[in-house]
Image (tube, rainbow, N blue to C red; front, side, top):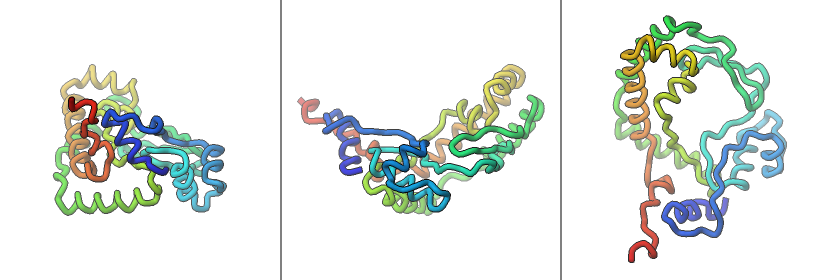
Length: 214
């Protein structure tokens, strides 16, 4: 969208922009097709969604496209996920009980704790990828860094769920504490790799408005 970055920078710097910046995630066929001027027909749906967001929003993140009914995949915890259009759910849990989750968590802690720190080459490659991806949006700001709170990641990123997580926290407090810390450190490593202040309007929003310097 035209002037989107300037509008967001002004808002975060305490300067009144021409209007409030519009941020959203759009998962609606009618809205997307209206603003894109094209149909979502399972052809190049990604281009259709990008066209709509570029006309509609100042900022967005985590862009998604509709999935065919019955589309399935395994998440990082091994759960079988099924999707229909814009909605997805756990069709088959990989760990039906707390004991199975506890065994998985032990292995996941080891995996997370063995993750390497981001390298300069990896950071620059991510910067280049972000520049290339953002160029598709014709001014609309795509926010690449959206870290998750560790507990939310455990419950929803891994699809552990509130029920399993509550019991695990009660029965295996030290194990869950280590898992949460390992997830947090993994998220921090991801931030160090993908957060680039020069590409994000939030990174340049520390400027003070003239009225506040008096």
